[in-house]
Length: 99
Image 1 (cartoon, rainbow, N blue to C red):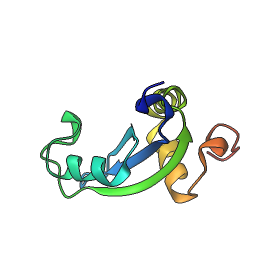
Image 2: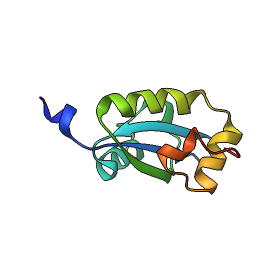
Image 3: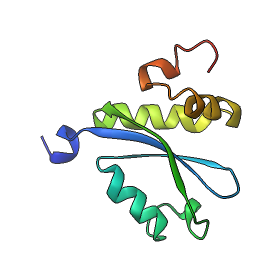
Image 4: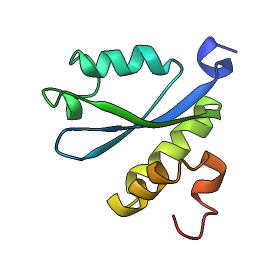
């Protein structure tokens, strides 16, 4: 197994000044957020500073993280806002009746 497969993976949401929410995954939240803030992260966030990390939680394996990220990216803005507001755990995101 590689480090990528055995490392703890996280899912996160970042808010832009335009109030958009960006979803991503990483094994190191601090490093990845710094990359985004310096313009070396996702193209979608370049030039949109200041950014705010508004939600993050561990999700397990890389495979789990990829699956959850794909689902969260398809959620409506309202649904993502509820995840942040209620600080839902990844296990609650799909089970929460109000989310």
